Image 1 (cartoon, helix red, strand yellow):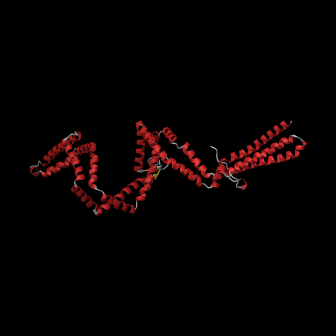
Image 2: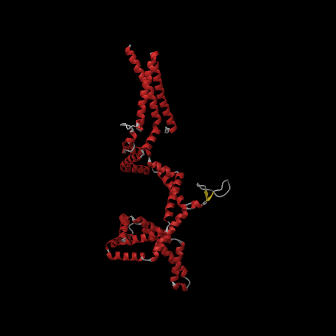
Image 3: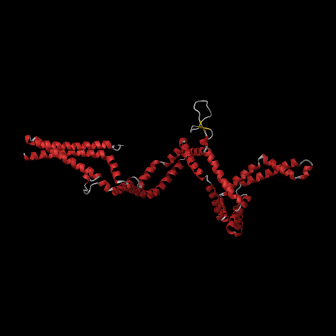
Length: 443
């Protein structure tokens, strides 16, 4: 790509073009004076005369593009400054028509392959590390900004005000309806039942149950059978509960699960239709919100959360620099630091890499990403194309005329001076040809 002409080079080219004009003038004067001595000087004079005409005409044309020749307000000169607005509109229309049409952008996006590029970018550990670094820096800046007493007070009072205005009864009813619609809650219920069964099988819990049962059976304690009876009873209770929970987890049509579903449906209906129940829920909510330590707890929770996140994000700064050379300490990370870094940043980078590799192995998902980009692109293109056009028009119109003229002249000035040089030479040759033809016809 050609670089803009430097002011020194442009001045040199102007001097060359002007020197040719001067040479043509000198040649014309000399040839005119010498023409009586020999007819050949007439051809030289014709060349010099036409060369001057060509040089002056091209000089006028080149100068008229940027300014008024000799400062005279001749019509249709200073074309570029005078037509700045028209140039901006034409440039914007050209850009939108030939670079930002919907078909062209969609064709480019189709070749771009957003899904593949996203997958490869995320799967690259270096890119994932850079992503987590920028995300961590942004998050740290935001958290540090929020770590302010005014923000903590605002969060506490605003959250309490929002909760106070919330119709908790109807909200709970809607949430229960959504959660139980289409038996969505069954998967969660089965997971909870299996977790409870596993929890009951824990040896420490069984031992604790045996101790409680033994303490309650006072008669057996007199004969020394309390511990044995407690262990036996606890084992039976645990076995029975575990079996019951397993049956409920494995059998969607279990009677107890049916009763549980009925209870949830009834509760959702009552929360929606029973004004007395909703009133009790509201009273409980307001009693909780009116508890003075709650606001303090919310502010403390906010501060603790911010402090924990900031400590984690600051871990990279606290990590000590690595020592150079072998055998001088533990291994260093990619940032050239030693010690544990930000867990959050590490998790972000790890998640990005995992996501990228998952995408690399899932052609269907990559195709879905490409399809979504292509489906959404027309709306964005149509929305922003006119804004881009208006921006280009406004930007060109706001340019300083003298500054724009100087910049354009620097960009194409060298070629324009060659036009002047070529005009001088071509004009002279044309004049020579015309003079020769004239002399030929005279003969």
